[in-house]
Image (cartoon, rainbow, N blue to C red):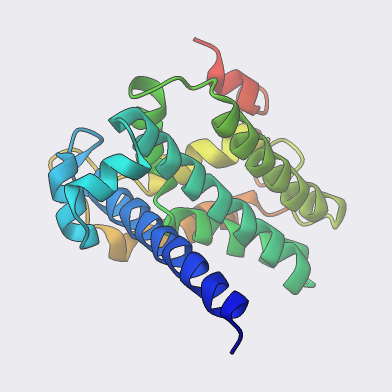
Length: 214
C-alpha cells in the first residue's frame, strides 16, 4: 500500500463515518417526529441515533434544518419507491398499489403538520424533493389511467389526501397501534380507484396546487 493510498483512506474514512452518522440522525429523527411530533428534544434524537449532541448540531445547526432534512428524505424515498414500481411492475395498477403502500410505510402523513408549521415550506431543497415526488406520482397514475385501470376522475391531490388520512391514526389512539390496519384500509381505497368507476364523485379531481391553496 502506497503512502498516497494510506493518506486517501485516512481522509475518506471520517467522511464515510460522518455520512453514516448523518443518516442515523435522520432515521432517528424520522421515527421520533412520527411518534412524538416535531418538537421532540434533539437530545433524545441524539440518544436514539447513538451519537453525541455535538454530532447532531454539527450536521444540523437548528431544528428547522433537521426537520427539513427528514421531510426531504421521506419525499426522496417515496419517489424512489415510485420509480422502482414503474421499472419493475408490468401491470400499471399494481405499480400504483405498490407506490401507495410504500408511501404509507414512509409515514408520509406525519409530514403535513411539520411542513405547515416547522419551517420555510418554500426552501429550494424541499421544493425540489416535492416536485420530484409529485412528478413520479403523476407518472404512476397516468400509466394506470392510460391502461384503462384507473378511473379518470381522480387527481394526484386526491391520492395524496387519501394516503395521508388513511395512514394517520385517529385521535385518541396510539400512533403505532394502528399500523396493522393501515395497509388493509389503503387497499380498500385502492380498489375504489379501479376503472370502471362505480359512482360519480362530487366536485373536481384535486391537484397538489389545490392542496397548497389556503
